[in-house]
Image (cartoon, rainbow, N blue to C red; front, top):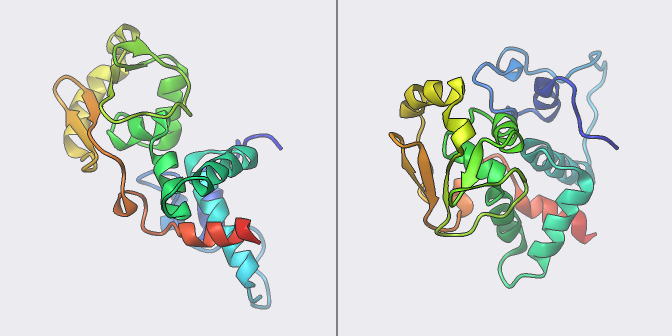
Length: 202
């Protein structure tokens, strides 16, 4: 199955929460799921609710099923709580760190910045969105990225964006640093990693 390239807000309406990162998400205007209205209310089973939780996280981070299962398998082999370890691995993806620093207004835009070679890690260009970012790493723009018009626009827009506590941001130089590991309160509160663990544990 190929990556979803349709209207992103359609998924937001399907799962009942704004996942796209847009400030003007269609879910805020139309909260009903897409498609024709059902004449009867269907009860969702526990397995169905677990599937919905998995799909919400998978879609928000822009992952295929095989990639997402890989993160779960890595987290389950760790010594910590599986759900929290999985979210920690997802948060430390390069495209997500770029998004958390405010360099992109959404994860999709942050992924595009990485793929187009505008992001540098410790001064070296890195165009792999799934690259794991370690503590102490410095993230900024490449020389090509600094010459772009977007870099100049971002310098003004980033003043209204705030980075989480596990990241350190210099808004003047547009350089960020990973100073710690993300915790349970650093990802979206509507994600339920425990339900994902239960889904894969069956």
